Image (cartoon, rainbow, N blue to C red; front, side, top):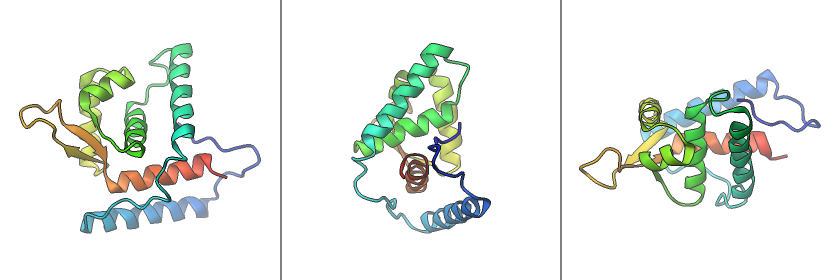
Length: 155
């Protein structure tokens, strides 16, 4: 999946890409040492309409071309959780499965991988069920998603 870059904008130079990678490494170290909140510009409410259009465009694309042609479940999960974060909430595994039309086993596998990479935080809503736990983006992932959003959609 590539980010949308308007025709009048140039592709980021290798220097810019290297800078983003270095920043991501710094944020990883920063968040690994402390339980710091994510660094966001504003409250994110200005991003919600654009993100909603982007998500709807992905759903329409899947409907027109078939669900499996553009399969990218990890990215879809990150997008759904970013939207939930901007709206002030979290999603359970079942909600992710239902919303994204992915099997629960795919969601569980992808969430496990992203948790091991430090991208997701778990908030259990029921101590007796792993399916009922709420998932949120970690501060590192929230920073990365906000950076992606800025690169992809802001001028």
